[in-house]
Length: 194
Image 1 (cartoon, rainbow, N blue to C red):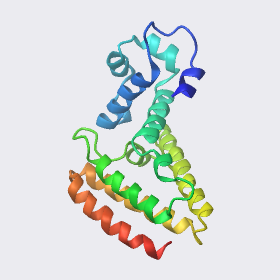
Image 2: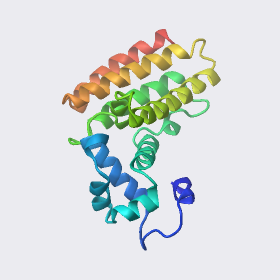
Image 3: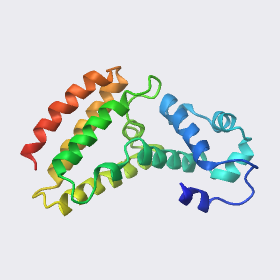
C-alpha cells in the first residue's frame, strides 16, 4: 500500500500506519455500510482524533475509496487469477470459487464490499464503488482479449452477473457451501462463452 502512504501529508501520529487503519475502516464499512459509519467511529477504531483523521485522509469519501481499493486488492486480487498465459476457463472458474468462499467468510462482513455499495449508484460512495468495479471488469476483459477470446465482453458480463448474485445471496445469509454449488454450476456454463 505504499502508493497510499506516499500520497499522504507529513505530520501523522507517531506509530500510525495507513494500511491497518484503512483495513479497520474497511471492516466498519463492510459491516455497517457507508452511511452508518461516521468519521468519529472510524477515528475511534483507528485510535486517532477526528482532526487527525482529516489531516491524514482528507475526507470520509477519500478514506472510503482507499478502503475499497484495499478490499479489491486483497479480498479478490485479480492478479491472482488473471495471469498471462493462464487458461481463461481456469482463471474465471477460480474467481467464482474464491468469490463464493470470500463473500461468506465473515458473519458480519457478508457479500462484496464493492458490489454492495455500487447498488447506491446515485451517491458519491456508490459512484466510487461502481468506478472501481468497472476498472476491475475492464481488467478481466483485457485479460480475455489478450487470451484471444472471440467476444470477451460476454464472459466478462457473465462472471460479473454471477458475482453479483453470489454477493446478494451471501447478504441474505447463504453459507459458503451453498454459494460454492452455485459457483461450480456457473463455472460449468463458462464453456459456451470461451
